[in-house]
Image (cartoon, rainbow, N blue to C red; front, side, top):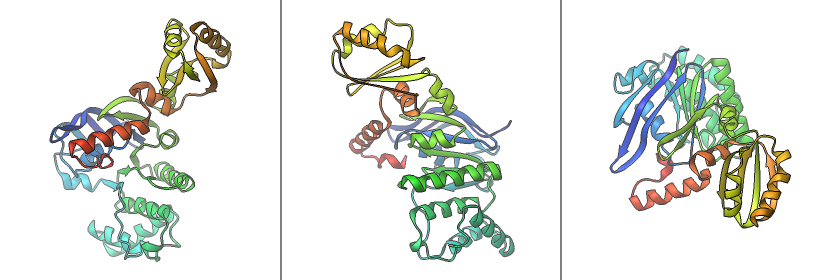
Length: 332
């Protein structure tokens, strides 16, 4: 299968800040690929480079076989993009927004009307097309933006935080529309998100990004499998260091993470290991307040590879951005 997107050793610097640091990956034709990481990790910067909205500092990137530093107009005719920030004119109706966008691509009237009708049907907005945008809900606006991104029949669609700010029920509806257009229209999709469940539900493969670097890349299932079959989480009030020393001497624990008094352990058949864990805790003099057993999540994977939860990373990036005098992390 040929790659629809190819990125090699991509670097982007803003003044003294490196937003993207030696990133390499491929997205195959028809794939739904995710860039997962906190706001400010470099996800949007990568999308903006691939969409020719900003220039790379070094490295190489191409979309649909066209270099991002080559014929930019030709590349833009192959892509659609839904921005993180809303980009609709609230004074127009949904249909008028689509008509304006189609005219910008030079589509003739008959073709323009045909495509608008099809994309409105795809996102289930044909009955709302002639309402003013100010009467649209947040979910309806996102669906219309996705429809707009499909007007020119793109080979590649970029979705930058497509469900940001939406409630859980609306977010799930948007997920269904995204999967539908990927499967039925065979559109290659690359999306950015900081929602773990969104990446897990939608993406065939996920690249986890931290401080502008890819720290892991695989299918969500394989990423979770790297941690072992089960996660056992111990809430510890005291003695955690002594217990960790004992646990490191075992051969059945594949990952150990201590964070905010919670000791997260990855292992096979965790249900059978809990009695042994409690014995080791008593030997170490550890005060265990609770035990929780579950399957690994992408949040566990992120913690394993970075040492932090994604929300804490966002706070750290916000702090760094504030003191460096750079724009809010969500914009990179």
